[in-house]
Image (cartoon, rainbow, N blue to C red; front, side):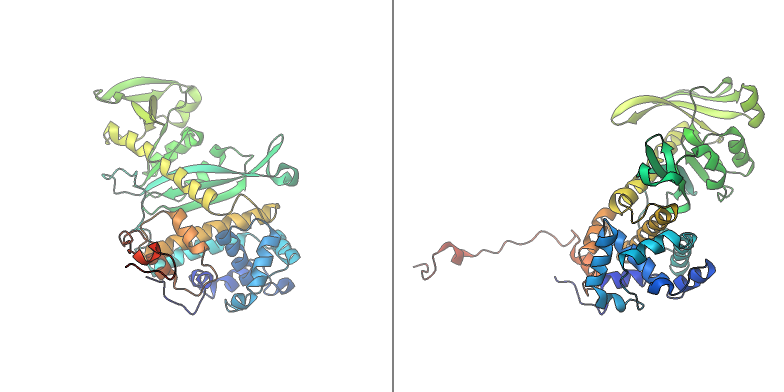
Length: 409
Protein backbone atom coordinates (compact mmCIF):
# COMPACT_ATOMS: atom_id res chain seq x y z
CA UNK A 1 0.00 0.00 0.00
CA UNK A 2 1.39 3.38 -1.05
CA UNK A 3 0.66 6.64 0.84
CA UNK A 4 -1.89 8.94 -0.82
CA UNK A 5 -0.97 12.31 -2.31
CA UNK A 6 -1.71 15.68 -0.69
CA UNK A 7 -1.72 19.27 -1.94
CA UNK A 8 0.55 20.35 0.94
CA UNK A 9 3.93 19.11 2.08
CA UNK A 10 4.13 17.20 5.36
CA UNK A 11 5.87 20.21 6.95
CA UNK A 12 2.97 22.45 5.88
CA UNK A 13 0.43 19.97 7.30
CA UNK A 14 2.17 20.04 10.67
CA UNK A 15 2.50 23.84 10.65
CA UNK A 16 -1.19 24.15 9.74
CA UNK A 17 -2.06 22.88 13.23
CA UNK A 18 -1.01 26.32 14.52
CA UNK A 19 -3.93 28.77 14.03
CA UNK A 20 -3.12 31.31 11.32
CA UNK A 21 -3.94 34.35 13.46
CA UNK A 22 -1.89 33.26 16.47
CA UNK A 23 1.71 34.06 15.50
CA UNK A 24 1.01 37.64 14.23
CA UNK A 25 -1.11 38.29 17.32
CA UNK A 26 1.61 37.14 19.75
CA UNK A 27 4.29 38.97 17.76
CA UNK A 28 2.34 42.19 18.18
CA UNK A 29 1.82 41.58 21.91
CA UNK A 30 5.52 40.94 22.54
CA UNK A 31 6.89 43.75 20.43
CA UNK A 32 8.22 41.64 17.55
CA UNK A 33 7.97 43.72 14.38
CA UNK A 34 6.07 42.11 11.52
CA UNK A 35 8.76 42.49 8.87
CA UNK A 36 11.96 42.91 10.80
CA UNK A 37 14.88 42.46 8.37
CA UNK A 38 12.45 40.96 5.77
CA UNK A 39 12.12 37.93 8.04
CA UNK A 40 8.61 37.70 9.50
CA UNK A 41 7.77 36.08 12.87
CA UNK A 42 5.86 33.38 10.98
CA UNK A 43 8.97 32.58 8.93
CA UNK A 44 11.01 32.60 12.15
CA UNK A 45 8.78 30.07 13.91
CA UNK A 46 8.62 27.85 10.81
CA UNK A 47 12.41 27.96 10.47
CA UNK A 48 12.96 26.86 14.06
CA UNK A 49 10.35 24.13 13.70
CA UNK A 50 12.14 22.86 10.60
CA UNK A 51 15.37 22.91 12.59
CA UNK A 52 13.74 20.56 15.12
CA UNK A 53 12.06 18.27 12.60
CA UNK A 54 15.11 17.90 10.34
CA UNK A 55 17.74 17.85 13.12
CA UNK A 56 19.67 20.76 11.62
CA UNK A 57 23.02 21.17 13.34
CA UNK A 58 23.92 24.77 12.42
CA UNK A 59 22.64 28.04 11.05
CA UNK A 60 24.07 27.27 7.61
CA UNK A 61 22.47 23.83 7.60
CA UNK A 62 19.05 25.31 8.32
CA UNK A 63 19.29 28.25 5.93
CA UNK A 64 20.71 26.25 3.01
CA UNK A 65 18.02 23.57 3.29
CA UNK A 66 15.18 26.12 3.40
CA UNK A 67 16.68 28.03 0.46
CA UNK A 68 16.73 24.82 -1.59
CA UNK A 69 12.99 24.41 -0.89
CA UNK A 70 12.07 28.08 -1.21
CA UNK A 71 9.21 27.32 -3.62
CA UNK A 72 7.45 24.97 -1.22
CA UNK A 73 8.31 27.29 1.67
CA UNK A 74 6.51 30.25 0.10
CA UNK A 75 3.25 28.29 0.01
CA UNK A 76 3.35 28.02 3.81
CA UNK A 77 1.81 31.39 4.80
CA UNK A 78 4.22 33.27 2.50
CA UNK A 79 7.26 32.24 4.52
CA UNK A 80 10.76 32.98 3.25
CA UNK A 81 14.12 31.31 3.73
CA UNK A 82 16.35 33.41 6.02
CA UNK A 83 19.97 34.32 5.55
CA UNK A 84 22.39 33.16 8.21
CA UNK A 85 22.68 36.66 9.68
CA UNK A 86 18.92 37.23 9.66
CA UNK A 87 18.24 34.01 11.59
CA UNK A 88 21.03 34.69 14.07
CA UNK A 89 19.79 38.25 14.61
CA UNK A 90 16.18 37.10 15.13
CA UNK A 91 17.20 34.49 17.68
CA UNK A 92 19.27 37.04 19.56
CA UNK A 93 16.95 40.08 19.69
CA UNK A 94 13.36 38.86 19.32
CA UNK A 95 11.60 38.40 22.64
CA UNK A 96 11.63 34.68 23.52
CA UNK A 97 8.55 35.22 25.68
CA UNK A 98 6.67 35.03 22.38
CA UNK A 99 7.86 31.43 21.88
CA UNK A 100 6.73 30.56 25.40
CA UNK A 101 3.32 32.15 24.85
CA UNK A 102 2.99 30.39 21.49
CA UNK A 103 3.60 27.00 23.08
CA UNK A 104 0.92 27.45 25.74
CA UNK A 105 -1.53 29.03 23.29
CA UNK A 106 -1.19 26.14 20.81
CA UNK A 107 -1.53 23.56 23.59
CA UNK A 108 -4.66 25.28 24.93
CA UNK A 109 -6.10 25.55 21.41
CA UNK A 110 -5.56 21.84 20.72
CA UNK A 111 -7.17 20.89 24.03
CA UNK A 112 -10.11 23.22 23.37
CA UNK A 113 -10.64 22.06 19.79
CA UNK A 114 -10.27 18.38 20.69
CA UNK A 115 -11.09 17.93 24.40
CA UNK A 116 -10.22 14.24 24.28
CA UNK A 117 -6.63 15.02 23.24
CA UNK A 118 -4.46 14.06 26.20
CA UNK A 119 -7.27 12.17 27.90
CA UNK A 120 -7.26 9.39 25.35
CA UNK A 121 -4.40 7.78 23.50
CA UNK A 122 -0.96 7.80 25.02
CA UNK A 123 -0.48 7.70 28.76
CA UNK A 124 2.42 6.61 30.90
CA UNK A 125 2.27 2.85 31.42
CA UNK A 126 3.72 3.04 34.94
CA UNK A 127 0.71 4.79 36.51
CA UNK A 128 -0.91 2.73 39.28
CA UNK A 129 -4.32 1.89 37.80
CA UNK A 130 -6.16 2.45 41.06
CA UNK A 131 -5.37 6.19 40.93
CA UNK A 132 -7.86 8.19 38.87
CA UNK A 133 -6.86 11.60 40.18
CA UNK A 134 -4.39 13.85 38.39
CA UNK A 135 -0.80 12.80 39.15
CA UNK A 136 1.73 15.61 38.73
CA UNK A 137 5.42 14.74 38.62
CA UNK A 138 7.91 17.54 39.26
CA UNK A 139 11.58 17.41 38.25
CA UNK A 140 14.25 19.30 36.35
CA UNK A 141 16.67 18.44 33.56
CA UNK A 142 20.01 20.09 32.86
CA UNK A 143 20.84 21.04 29.27
CA UNK A 144 24.58 21.33 28.67
CA UNK A 145 25.89 24.36 26.82
CA UNK A 146 29.27 25.81 25.82
CA UNK A 147 30.84 27.48 28.86
CA UNK A 148 33.12 29.82 26.90
CA UNK A 149 30.13 31.38 25.08
CA UNK A 150 27.57 31.62 27.86
CA UNK A 151 28.30 33.97 30.73
CA UNK A 152 24.57 34.06 31.60
CA UNK A 153 24.48 30.29 32.23
CA UNK A 154 27.65 29.68 34.22
CA UNK A 155 26.99 26.48 36.13
CA UNK A 156 30.38 25.38 37.40
CA UNK A 157 33.95 26.49 36.91
CA UNK A 158 34.27 25.20 33.34
CA UNK A 159 30.69 24.34 32.56
CA UNK A 160 27.56 26.16 31.49
CA UNK A 161 24.03 24.84 31.40
CA UNK A 162 20.39 25.76 31.18
CA UNK A 163 17.78 23.98 33.24
CA UNK A 164 14.22 22.99 32.44
CA UNK A 165 11.91 22.74 35.46
CA UNK A 166 8.82 20.75 34.56
CA UNK A 167 5.51 19.63 36.02
CA UNK A 168 4.14 16.71 33.99
CA UNK A 169 0.64 15.26 34.05
CA UNK A 170 1.21 11.50 33.88
CA UNK A 171 -2.28 10.71 32.58
CA UNK A 172 -1.99 12.97 29.53
CA UNK A 173 1.83 12.87 29.41
CA UNK A 174 1.72 16.59 28.58
CA UNK A 175 3.50 19.40 30.45
CA UNK A 176 1.43 21.53 32.81
CA UNK A 177 4.22 23.93 33.77
CA UNK A 178 7.65 24.62 32.26
CA UNK A 179 10.35 27.00 33.47
CA UNK A 180 13.51 27.48 31.40
CA UNK A 181 16.41 29.37 33.00
CA UNK A 182 20.10 29.04 33.85
CA UNK A 183 21.18 26.06 35.95
CA UNK A 184 22.93 28.07 38.66
CA UNK A 185 19.86 28.06 40.95
CA UNK A 186 18.75 25.35 43.35
CA UNK A 187 15.69 23.27 42.45
CA UNK A 188 14.28 24.14 45.86
CA UNK A 189 14.09 27.83 44.90
CA UNK A 190 11.71 27.00 42.04
CA UNK A 191 9.43 24.59 43.93
CA UNK A 192 6.83 27.22 44.82
CA UNK A 193 6.47 28.43 41.24
CA UNK A 194 6.44 24.94 39.72
CA UNK A 195 3.64 23.74 42.04
CA UNK A 196 1.63 26.98 42.08
CA UNK A 197 -0.99 25.62 39.66
CA UNK A 198 -1.64 22.32 41.42
CA UNK A 199 -5.29 22.13 42.50
CA UNK A 200 -6.86 20.61 45.60
CA UNK A 201 -7.35 16.85 45.34
CA UNK A 202 -4.44 16.35 42.93
CA UNK A 203 -1.23 14.44 43.66
CA UNK A 204 2.34 15.72 43.39
CA UNK A 205 5.39 13.45 43.29
CA UNK A 206 8.93 14.83 43.43
CA UNK A 207 12.40 13.81 44.57
CA UNK A 208 14.46 15.04 47.52
CA UNK A 209 15.78 18.08 45.67
CA UNK A 210 12.37 19.77 45.99
CA UNK A 211 11.82 19.01 49.70
CA UNK A 212 11.10 22.19 51.63
CA UNK A 213 8.92 21.60 54.70
CA UNK A 214 7.36 25.04 54.56
CA UNK A 215 6.34 24.39 50.96
CA UNK A 216 5.10 20.90 51.84
CA UNK A 217 2.94 22.36 54.62
CA UNK A 218 1.42 24.87 52.20
CA UNK A 219 0.56 22.04 49.80
CA UNK A 220 -1.13 20.16 52.64
CA UNK A 221 -3.16 23.24 53.58
CA UNK A 222 -4.28 23.54 49.94
CA UNK A 223 -5.60 19.95 49.97
CA UNK A 224 -2.84 18.54 47.76
CA UNK A 225 -1.47 15.05 48.41
CA UNK A 226 2.26 14.66 47.90
CA UNK A 227 4.88 11.87 47.94
CA UNK A 228 8.63 12.32 48.16
CA UNK A 229 11.71 10.69 49.66
CA UNK A 230 13.18 11.33 53.09
CA UNK A 231 16.47 13.21 53.26
CA UNK A 232 19.26 11.38 55.08
CA UNK A 233 19.78 14.15 57.65
CA UNK A 234 16.09 14.43 58.60
CA UNK A 235 15.53 14.37 62.40
CA UNK A 236 12.24 12.84 63.47
CA UNK A 237 10.56 10.69 66.09
CA UNK A 238 8.05 7.89 65.59
CA UNK A 239 4.71 8.71 67.23
CA UNK A 240 2.58 5.82 66.04
CA UNK A 241 2.17 2.74 63.87
CA UNK A 242 0.07 3.04 60.72
CA UNK A 243 0.12 -0.57 59.50
CA UNK A 244 2.02 -3.79 60.18
CA UNK A 245 5.04 -4.64 57.98
CA UNK A 246 4.38 -7.19 55.26
CA UNK A 247 6.05 -8.25 52.03
CA UNK A 248 8.36 -5.54 50.74
CA UNK A 249 7.11 -3.02 53.36
CA UNK A 250 9.61 -2.80 56.22
CA UNK A 251 7.71 -0.22 58.29
CA UNK A 252 4.77 2.15 57.95
CA UNK A 253 4.70 4.71 60.78
CA UNK A 254 3.58 8.20 61.76
CA UNK A 255 6.38 10.63 62.57
CA UNK A 256 6.95 14.16 63.80
CA UNK A 257 9.91 16.34 62.88
CA UNK A 258 12.16 17.10 65.85
CA UNK A 259 14.56 19.67 64.46
CA UNK A 260 13.46 23.13 65.73
CA UNK A 261 13.54 24.72 62.26
CA UNK A 262 11.78 21.94 60.35
CA UNK A 263 9.20 21.27 63.10
CA UNK A 264 8.24 24.94 63.06
CA UNK A 265 7.75 24.79 59.28
CA UNK A 266 5.77 21.52 59.40
CA UNK A 267 4.28 20.99 62.88
CA UNK A 268 1.77 18.30 61.86
CA UNK A 269 2.16 14.53 61.72
CA UNK A 270 3.70 12.93 58.64
CA UNK A 271 3.72 9.39 57.36
CA UNK A 272 6.93 7.47 56.65
CA UNK A 273 7.00 4.27 54.61
CA UNK A 274 10.20 2.22 54.38
CA UNK A 275 10.25 -0.47 51.72
CA UNK A 276 12.43 -2.61 49.47
CA UNK A 277 12.18 -1.41 45.88
CA UNK A 278 13.93 -2.59 42.75
CA UNK A 279 16.31 -0.08 41.16
CA UNK A 280 18.22 -1.14 38.05
CA UNK A 281 17.34 -4.78 38.70
CA UNK A 282 18.75 -4.70 42.24
CA UNK A 283 16.77 -4.41 45.51
CA UNK A 284 17.30 -1.20 47.50
CA UNK A 285 15.90 0.09 50.78
CA UNK A 286 14.15 3.47 50.44
CA UNK A 287 12.13 5.69 52.77
CA UNK A 288 9.16 7.65 51.44
CA UNK A 289 7.39 10.60 53.03
CA UNK A 290 3.78 11.62 52.46
CA UNK A 291 0.94 13.59 54.01
CA UNK A 292 -1.70 11.02 52.98
CA UNK A 293 -2.91 8.80 55.81
CA UNK A 294 -5.33 6.66 53.76
CA UNK A 295 -3.37 5.02 50.93
CA UNK A 296 -1.93 1.55 51.28
CA UNK A 297 1.86 1.58 51.79
CA UNK A 298 2.36 -0.28 48.51
CA UNK A 299 0.44 2.45 46.68
CA UNK A 300 2.84 5.06 48.04
CA UNK A 301 5.80 3.07 46.70
CA UNK A 302 4.09 2.66 43.33
CA UNK A 303 3.35 6.38 43.13
CA UNK A 304 6.97 7.30 43.66
CA UNK A 305 8.04 4.64 41.16
CA UNK A 306 5.76 6.29 38.57
CA UNK A 307 7.98 9.37 38.86
CA UNK A 308 10.19 7.67 36.26
CA UNK A 309 7.68 8.85 33.65
CA UNK A 310 9.15 12.34 33.70
CA UNK A 311 12.58 10.88 32.89
CA UNK A 312 11.00 9.22 29.83
CA UNK A 313 9.62 12.63 28.81
CA UNK A 314 13.03 14.29 29.17
CA UNK A 315 14.61 11.49 27.14
CA UNK A 316 12.13 12.02 24.29
CA UNK A 317 12.74 15.76 24.31
CA UNK A 318 16.53 15.69 24.59
CA UNK A 319 17.36 12.66 22.46
CA UNK A 320 14.71 12.89 19.74
CA UNK A 321 14.35 16.64 19.23
CA UNK A 322 17.17 19.10 18.62
CA UNK A 323 18.34 20.69 21.86
CA UNK A 324 21.91 19.42 21.77
CA UNK A 325 23.18 21.73 18.99
CA UNK A 326 21.99 25.31 19.33
CA UNK A 327 21.43 27.96 16.66
CA UNK A 328 22.72 30.62 19.07
CA UNK A 329 24.19 30.82 22.55
CA UNK A 330 22.56 33.91 24.00
CA UNK A 331 19.90 33.33 26.64
CA UNK A 332 17.23 34.52 24.23
CA UNK A 333 18.34 32.16 21.44
CA UNK A 334 18.48 29.15 23.76
CA UNK A 335 14.98 29.88 25.06
CA UNK A 336 13.65 30.21 21.49
CA UNK A 337 15.02 26.80 20.58
CA UNK A 338 13.85 25.01 23.74
CA UNK A 339 10.33 26.41 23.55
CA UNK A 340 10.11 25.53 19.85
CA UNK A 341 11.22 21.98 20.67
CA UNK A 342 8.38 21.72 23.18
CA UNK A 343 5.98 23.13 20.58
CA UNK A 344 7.03 20.51 18.01
CA UNK A 345 6.66 17.79 20.64
CA UNK A 346 3.05 18.79 21.36
CA UNK A 347 2.20 19.03 17.63
CA UNK A 348 3.64 15.57 16.96
CA UNK A 349 1.76 14.17 19.93
CA UNK A 350 -1.42 15.63 18.44
CA UNK A 351 -0.61 14.06 15.05
CA UNK A 352 -0.06 10.72 16.80
CA UNK A 353 -3.42 11.05 18.56
CA UNK A 354 -5.26 11.96 15.35
CA UNK A 355 -3.62 9.13 13.42
CA UNK A 356 -4.09 6.55 16.21
CA UNK A 357 -0.34 5.96 16.24
CA UNK A 358 0.49 2.99 18.49
CA UNK A 359 4.27 3.03 18.28
CA UNK A 360 6.99 5.09 19.93
CA UNK A 361 7.41 8.84 19.70
CA UNK A 362 10.91 8.35 18.28
CA UNK A 363 9.60 6.25 15.40
CA UNK A 364 6.86 8.81 14.68
CA UNK A 365 9.52 11.52 14.50
CA UNK A 366 11.81 9.57 12.14
CA UNK A 367 8.93 8.60 9.84
CA UNK A 368 7.79 12.21 9.39
CA UNK A 369 11.33 13.58 9.17
CA UNK A 370 11.98 11.48 6.07
CA UNK A 371 9.03 12.98 4.14
CA UNK A 372 9.00 16.60 5.35
CA UNK A 373 9.10 18.07 1.84
CA UNK A 374 6.96 15.41 0.17
CA UNK A 375 3.36 16.15 -0.86
CA UNK A 376 1.97 13.10 0.89
CA UNK A 377 -0.85 12.78 3.36
CA UNK A 378 0.99 12.34 6.66
CA UNK A 379 -1.69 10.10 8.18
CA UNK A 380 -1.47 7.86 5.12
CA UNK A 381 2.29 7.73 5.60
CA UNK A 382 1.84 6.74 9.25
CA UNK A 383 -0.64 4.00 8.35
CA UNK A 384 1.81 2.57 5.80
CA UNK A 385 4.60 2.49 8.39
CA UNK A 386 2.61 0.59 11.00
CA UNK A 387 3.31 -3.01 11.88
CA UNK A 388 -0.32 -4.17 11.97
CA UNK A 389 -0.54 -5.14 8.30
CA UNK A 390 0.97 -8.57 8.77
CA UNK A 391 4.18 -10.05 7.44
CA UNK A 392 5.16 -9.56 3.82
CA UNK A 393 4.32 -12.52 1.56
CA UNK A 394 7.23 -14.06 -0.30
CA UNK A 395 6.57 -14.39 -4.04
CA UNK A 396 8.25 -17.30 -5.74
CA UNK A 397 10.26 -16.27 -8.85
CA UNK A 398 11.65 -19.47 -10.45
CA UNK A 399 12.54 -17.60 -13.66
CA UNK A 400 15.41 -15.94 -11.80
CA UNK A 401 17.09 -19.31 -11.37
CA UNK A 402 17.97 -19.62 -15.08
CA UNK A 403 20.44 -17.82 -17.32
CA UNK A 404 19.05 -15.27 -19.85
CA UNK A 405 17.89 -17.00 -23.03
CA UNK A 406 17.29 -20.30 -21.27
CA UNK A 407 14.05 -21.59 -19.87
CA UNK A 408 13.10 -24.70 -17.96
CA UNK A 409 12.74 -27.67 -20.28
